[in-house]
Image (cartoon, rainbow, N blue to C red; front, top):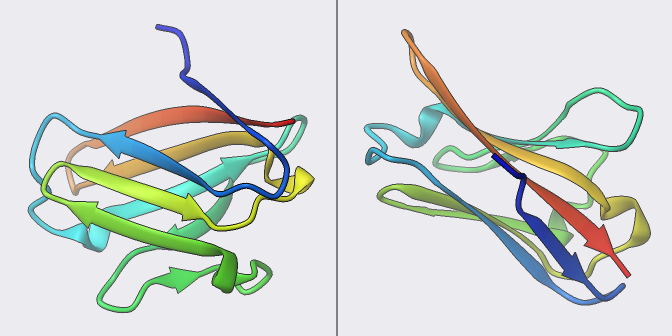
Length: 106
């Protein structure tokens, strides 16, 4: 399966959406990760009642929303460093589901 590609102009907003086959029983096990070229996965956010963003990220640029069977990550103003592979994960005690999208910045 090919990885979806989203291209956006530098400075423009973008929303990456991940859909899963089942409704979320709990959003407590949802996460967004980013992987830059040549780097390892870095946790961006774990949505909870109050979303927990990684301290090094400017949380004023990001927002996470979820509904039923999907979770979206919005970046309000893109910067060149936002380019990379974004992974969303829904993890349970027995299994996990992962989706990915590559974000290209022009």
